[in-house]
Length: 200
Image (cartoon, rainbow, N blue to C red; front, side, top):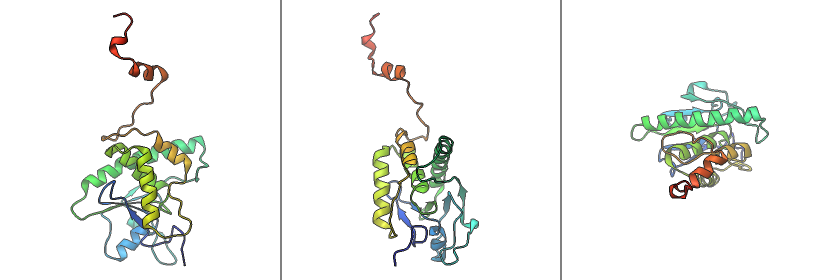
């Protein structure tokens, strides 16, 4: 029987092209790993993790870092979109610190309920802000990795268009800083070569 995306085990996909130690998964992935004595060194949660067997009770002790917000599946209000952007960027920066602290053989899990929207958005944002991935390439890779590596009913990684639109505004970087939005005048000035100055 094919289960829903918040219950499949092991419940994660490895995003090795982003980083060899990075996994993205669902709300039971951390517990499943712990039950196999392969606990994650860092678990970044957007929802409270749950045990990997019925009745799937919440287990907040599995969380290392917490960045909670609601996934409205693309129906976010403007206020909700602003919260989502702030959480995605904050979590991506925390993820960078977590990855930097890993010892050999340790792994980090970023998870939400189904391992589709919030968790993938954080991982994609990290790849853009700290590894110079373009948003388009990072989104495509994360989607493919989840579809290839996990088995659950009706997989739809990164189907929240609001989150994807947020990701598409990110400029590839290595230091986690957001590029300021360019005004029309700023963009024009960047295009204008110094020797085009009519006063010269």
